[in-house]
Image (tube, one colour):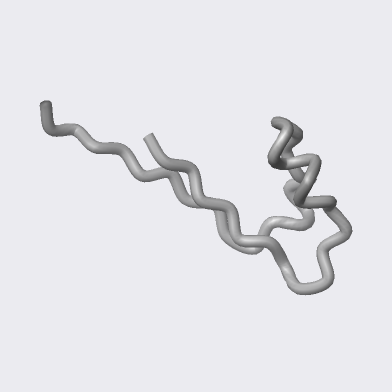
Length: 40
């Protein structure tokens, strides 16, 4: 599973926090997408 988050312009979320596992506030996300591979 792959989660893709696209931040809004001018977001205040520190990307270093994301690297260590923190999730950004939903108000700062422009697009969120989850990709799943169903083949085995």
